Image (cartoon, rainbow, N blue to C red):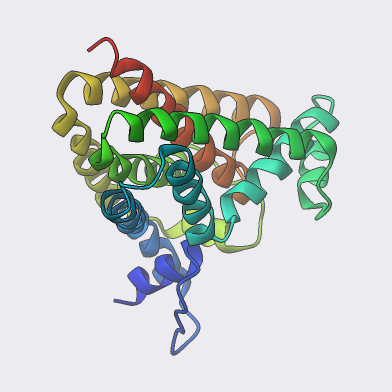
Amino acid sequence: MTPFLIALQFLTTFPIQLKAMPSPQQNAQSLLFYPIIGLLIGLILFATAYFLNTLPIILLSTLILVLWIWLTGGLHLDGLADTADAWVGGFGDKERTLSIMKDPACGPIGVLSLIILCLIKWSALYVLLDKKLYLALILFPILGRLAPLFLFLTTEYVRAKGLGSSIAQYIPKTWAMIVFALMLLATGYFVWTGLATAIIFILTLIYLRHKFVQRIDGITGDTVGASIEIVEAVSLLSFVVLSFYL
């Protein structure tokens, strides 16, 4: 259970206390449980939307978004802000980009990226709830947490130290590919809308990976966090738009 608890402690605000310092192998194995944590987050969002569906939609969509952020402690939003600041302030230079990512301060581009992403999520949630597609709320946190599996399987981790370096070194590649494929099948529940969303999800991951490799020759913890947020937002927006046509 240790790898699961590591993932739960790292990805959520749940009060998890580990009995001992995890090994590098356990840290790497915890990656396999990231989509399970996404499923747990999605189930909480679904239950909230289902039982509070009598509230005005504008209020409910705000509550869902705030709950979504609170459950993760804003961890991935922090990665998004750092990545946005570094991408603009780095001027195409790898070392400058990596240096800016380490800066704890959030610049105007970082703030703007958070506003844009939260606005996209909120408006898409509003439409999703208006169409009473509550069950779809389970899907997007799962897809978001498939992004780390894809990136660690396909991309070099560029920092020599930290949690990401041990994950990159010891990741169980075969099991990671199996988990990725099985969890992606969840989109099939929503038939054509789900299939089209899955395709957009894959294309988004490929694009993000390309940009990361192009700029810094790989990934960092911040870019992985940014990918989770971007993938969630793109998948949610795509699903809502596609639901009008498929």
